Amino acid sequence: MSKAPVRVAVTGAAGNIGYALLFRIASGDLLGPDQPVIIHLVDIPQALDACRGVVMELEDGAFPLLAGTQVSSDPEGSFGDVDVALLVGAKPRGPGQLRADLIRGNGPIFVGTGKAIDENAAKDVKVLVVGNPCNTNALIAKSQVKRTDARNYTAMTRLDQNRAMAQLAARSGAGVNDIKNLVVWGNHSPTMFPNWFGCTIGGKPATEVIDDSAWFEGDFLKTVQSRGKAIIEARGSSSAASAASAAIDHINSWATGNTTGDYVSMAVPSDGSYGVPEGLIFSFPCKITAPFQYEIAQGLELNDFAQAALKRSWEELQSEQDAVADLLA
Ligand code: NAX
Image (cartoon, rainbow, N blue to C red; front, side, top):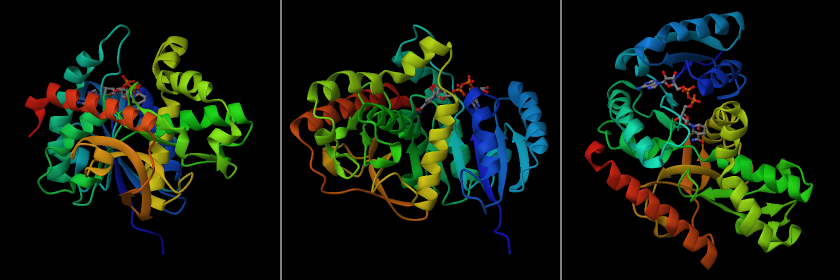
């Protein structure tokens, strides 16, 4: 007997990332090859015609797992009984725009979205925020929680993890599958820390395989931290297909435990582990213990370099939190 469909909402469904994401959800990449899905395409009223066009294309894909679609802007239509919510809808950072402006520009969206999810979605809804600044937007949405589970409000650093793994693979000549436990800690911003000290390549410490600390601390770190900017400069618009792919990876790992190692990078509400102030949405090494259950990995060793990097990132998140204090319920 086939499984009951799972409802997946995508906000910003008419946007670039949405376009790259929806077809992969319909094809089974998000939740597995035997899991039917009903997709809610959510956007602002002016973008609903474009969403209807995408629905026609989804229909034309004849995806066996696509059990239905709905297009909506209102809270109930958008999130009613939704099991997974991918919050992509937000403005990308424009050329020359400051991060502070982006925070104030996009933050208010997540007050309404958080409230709509909490009031309408399934009680154990799983939320992934992609729209930037994603950690702080997830914090804003989480602050609306009265009924759903605050631990299930997460933000995306999987793109940063994937970028870091690709750099290590290119430098070492190994395949990406040989790279395990490359975890990105902190904020999805230039303060993020891809912790190469805890990572292995082909079962050996990455620092043994690539015996070049100047490269890790220099080119590697810089490339990973500024990759988004480099893509904007080259493409003229921000990363879309790779961001969609990382969102698929984040939810797929969480849903199935299919990770690239023991741990996977997820920005989740801090419980105070590793000194990170409680409540901030911070990217930690997470262990998937059962379908849609995660735990923050405990007892990992962090050297002075790593600890200083984590502190920089949580201090940045604290200042973002202060900047949106009026938006937090
Ligand atoms: P687009 O401008 O192509 O699309 C954004 C969509 O969001 C539009 O359809 C717009 O109508 C919609 N939207 C705006 N306000 C909304 C609201 N209140 N409710 C629902 N929908 C709303 O941007 P796109 O390239 O798709 O990027 C979307 C977001 O992802 C941006 O904030 C971008 O910065 C962020 N990114 C996050 C990444 C990450 O790793 N976390 C990487 C890629 C990307 O930069």
